[in-house]
Structure formats: C-alpha cells, structure tokens
Length: 359
Image 1 (spheres, rainbow, N blue to C red):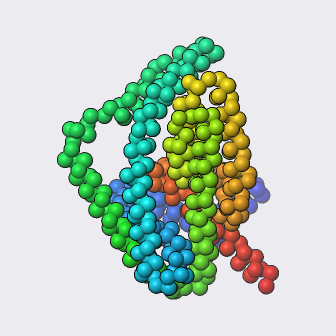
Image 2: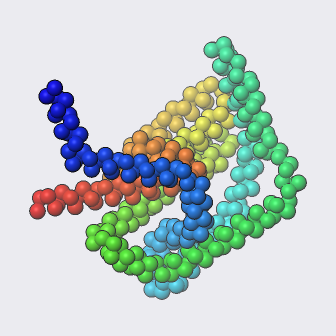
Image 3: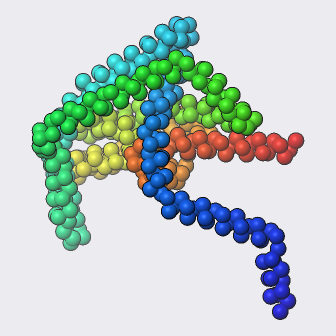
C-alpha cells in the first residue's frame, strides 16, 4: 500500500506532469508532420530546387578558395587570381573530358570480356567447392552489364538526350557563374555570415570559424588522399601486369570520395577482371591489396588527416548509409563533410563547456 501511495505521489508531481506534457506535445507535432508529409515534401523540394545552385556554387568557391588565396599572395589582385584559378579548373576539366573519357570508355570495353570471364570463374569455383549453382545470378549480372554497353535507347531518344545535355550544360554554367561571383566576394560573404551568426548567438562565430578551418583541412587532405589512393592502386595492378591498371587507379582515386566503400568497390572490380590471369597472380594481387590498404590506413591517412577531422570507420559507415538512404549518391558525398562539422562542433562545445566549468 505504501508503494502504491508513493507511486501515485510521483505520478501527480509537477515534474512528471511537465515531462508528460512535453512528450505529448512532441508526439502531436510528429503526428502533424506525418499527416502532412506530402505538403512538407513539396515545400522542401521547392526550397532545395531554389537553393541548390547557390549551395553548389558556394561549395565550389569554398573548395577553390585556398588555391585562390595562394595565387593572391603573388598576384595581389583578387579578381585576377579568381579568373586564373577558374580558367585553370575549366581547362583541366575539358582536358579530362576530352582525353580521359574516351580512354575510360575504351578501357571499360576491353574489361568487359575479362569481367565476364571472371564471373564464370567465380561460378565454377562456387560449383566445385560448395556444390551450389549460381549460373542464374552470373547470367543476370552479365545481362545487366551487356545492356549497359549495348543500350540502343539513346538512338531512339536523341532529342530528349540533347535537351537533357543542354539543361545540364546550362546548370553547370550557372553554377560556375555563381561560384566565380562568390569567390570574388568570399571574404565579404564570410564577414556577413559572421555578423549574422553573432546576432543569433555570441559564441556561434567561434563554431563557424572552427568548422571552416577543419573543412579546409579536410578538403586538402581528401585531395592528397585521393591522389595517393590512385597512385598506389595503379602500382598494385601495374606490378601484376593488369592491362587496365591506369583506369583502375583512376576509378579508385575518384571513388575515394566515398571512404572505405569506394576503394573496396574498385578493388573488387580489379579482382574480378584479374581472375583469368592465374591463381598465382590472384594470390599476389590479394597480398598487394592488403599491403596497400595497410599503408593507406596506418601510414598515409594518419599523416594527412588531423585528429580533429579524422573519423572512425563506424562513423564513416553510418554517415554513408544514412546519406545514401536520405539523399542517394549526393548524400554519400556530403556525409563526410557533415560528420566533420558535427564532430568539430561537439569538440568546440566540449572545450568551451570545460573552460567555463574550470573558470
């Protein structure tokens, strides 16, 4: 009986009542959001369509800003530095498209027979060792890849394809124009954001400054890591005599924009296309891949990433899965910068909170 009376007093206390009311309010808000999710989806989609050019333009300006600042130390004219960097970036982009894309297409076409042969080798291995027939699965994969290379729908939809190309080219031009404008006024944009942040909260500019510094370091480290990933992958496949070592290295470097998952996928492609090169070669390749991953994980990566913007593998996988579920491929790309921002924000908060307690 005493326990029951004590339980009633706890339930009737103001603290419990306020907690229950807050929970009910949160549940009602969630129910309203769920009931009107179609409206909110439309609003969010409209906001994203309007803000996307500015976000992409600012991202390009943010990534290129360290290079512009470096050139500006010698040129002393911001506008000239901006034009030099963007002309160089555009020239490199055109060079990659004009030289790399045909080479990539030819290399992929050459890899197609090796890919099919590798799938057959896998099917035979599984059949002989596990007594399980996966021929239907390998045939399904082969048909998908074959349809990708022999797709004739492009010829039937030439006008649609041209319209889409024109739309994409127009969008890219808009992104570049916005990025050039933002790069020219990047310091003013920073000061404006700082003033607005100070009006919202006095400590918010400190957070933004630390996030800015960490993201700049992350972008620099990413480019260095991608180049290192590409070079080491090229060396691995060059050592075993793979005919497509150059394209595999290029794919591995580009795919490192998705940490862990991208390079692993590139190595899986390399393994499949190497299955016809003999058992000894495959064993050597597996050993070289192990050495490469060890060198990248324990020697190169710790040197280029600081402890402030380095992320554990569990957080990386969580970010990739969450980003891909919410926003697809774009979510996988932006997951890492967002996680770095969250980590830096938490570290700055913890440092300020600790300092306020000690003082």
